[in-house]
Image 1 (cartoon, helix red, strand yellow):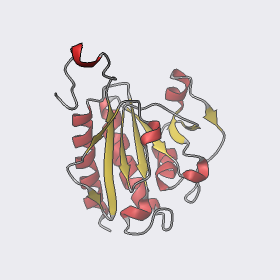
Image 2: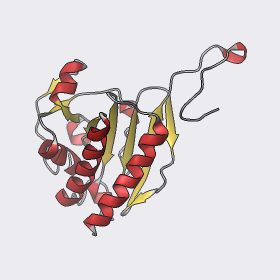
Image 3: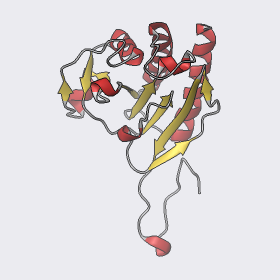
Image 4: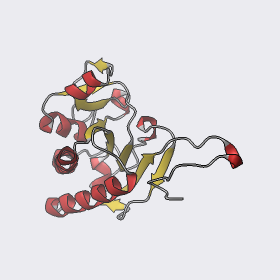
Length: 187
């Protein structure tokens, strides 16, 4: 796999989703990643440290430059716990759990997060404003309601299917109500 091309494509997909999701500085972005799927295999069957590192470092760098927090979802073996910076966990009073991810329990994305984050911890759950799902890992449980699906400019990354979610405030009040402009759907 061409890791330079993977970095370039990851950055392009991420920037597109950041811009269209209306995520702001200080908010949380979730990443779900199956490096097995990116490599062309089945989820959980052929994890790749190198692929995880390229994708997570690219996303972490881009989000950090914008002041957006990254939360990296673990696999089902860790009950979908998330790797985040300790300062985020403490600021948001998130439940820190005691586990260290490895390639086959947590996955390559979490292992890379623990390598590249300043002071990573695992938290049990989070409510993020947007996210990127590389390889059909099901990030929806971590995205604030109301979830808005975003179709990325590139729907494949290597062999992995790519989807994304943003969130917007609930519309309440029915036919008599008027609403503020929606920065995502722009209706």
